[in-house]
Image (cartoon, rainbow, N blue to C red; front, top):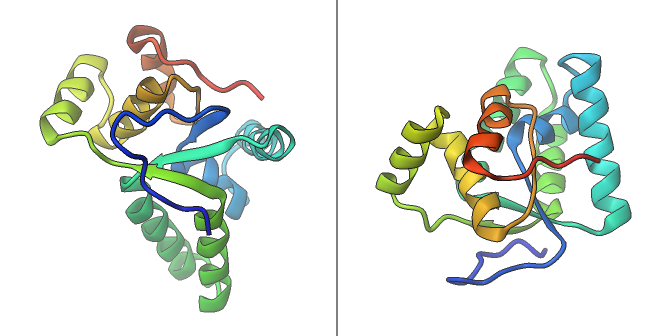
Length: 152
């Protein structure tokens, strides 16, 4: 398993931040056709370009919450959910979480996004890499905050 924490000031080449809105479309076939299409293209691009997926520590909790939610709502089997989480965990090559609550607050306040979304955006900015997202607020804030959106 390649999941690890970035060291202070460590920069990765050929990386991408992928937020949970995209990853959950890989597991659960919900959302609009355009959302599903984008998520599928992101996954294909990651494989064909051998991109390293970077996520904030928050993603660990976020992904477990959503998979558990779907397991109850859609009645997925426990083993299937565990397999899906393991697959996602293995895809994410790096996790990082050195932002402070004040940093998250300042960014979210200035850019009009949630503190959760700020963690993804700040990671993309700090690594100078694009972010793959379906979140409308993150997409809208990208122009103001100067982070790039991933276009597969």
